[in-house]
Image 1: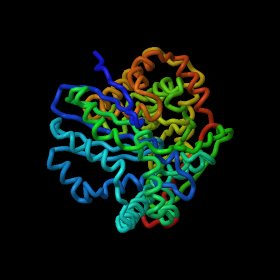
Image 2 (image 1 turned 120 degrees about the vertical axis):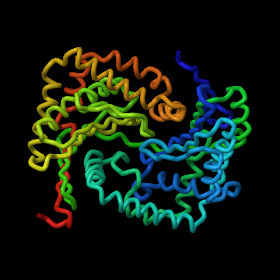
Image 3 (image 1 turned 90 degrees about the horizontal axis):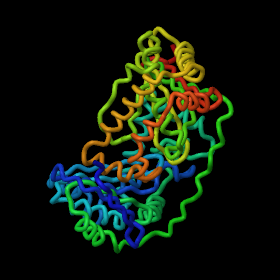
Image 4 (image 1 turned 180 degrees about the vertical axis):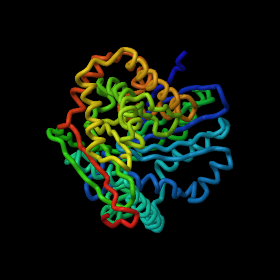
Length: 431
């Protein structure tokens, strides 16, 4: 039996999604804002992520240093995430302590202070985070691929932002971004757990109802032209590990093709977990690429990544190249498996197994109260909650012909970027 969800909107535009779950005395409270790196421009990249950091620096009612102690003292956990299309904050608390989370998020929707010294302190933290990322081969490769795959769309930028922008952005830039987008009419509040809906609505109205809406004017995000020729990129850097990443332009999550693409991903490389918050894992040892690359000692491991986004993003296949092999040999073997999907019928049993694995991973990422609240808001960021409710049924409709069509339409050489990370040794020198 599916637990019903109450959906409503306050007069200031704040959307509420409420789901009673009385299996444990817990409540998970998620605030989702429709602002992410997709909404940024050159000169301000990374600003959404930086504003997220500043939301933990306090308000007059909840000064910096008090917040974490207050949540921990009441037995709760909290965190935040910035992504391509959204920024989200959550608190999971004992049910009788949830008022703290409600008061906290209502307060910092309106009253975060952005003290100049805190801004400068956080600049140092974020620049250090960016520098740490640059020491990771797959981060460097991913950044190069995104910049190659997108020429106009902001999806070309890493969420943390460009280094020059992290030096350029000032306190007033951050505060304007916060005041513009942190508004009830740009937010979805999702709550799941042990509560009475009518009583919860009254509490939320009292906490959030008086917050004024913003004069939102989301700038149009440009459509990216389709890739019409294969693009290649090489990144050289320290280390001893060679990586191959092949990135194809993928459909948006709301596109009907996304479900068949999910089954293809499960069959080809093992299912991708859409819940970035967490929730179990499925072995990919039955996938075609594992058998073709890892079992034949062409790669140490291989995995795929399909992400739910508002506009078309990337489907990436990543291989950790075996020390005795080359990028070109691994790429040739990968391409052979893609050609098989395009040219040969896929058996019903193999499709059924791929669907079963994708369903299982989806279930693992949807089972506890925090994950249920996550999905209440997350699906709204790129489609709607019905997308989540219909997910399993849509996977069940996928046929072998659908998978073959997806491979033929999307997994073409002219629709992809081929990236390689070539190590130069631990000292960073060419060998």
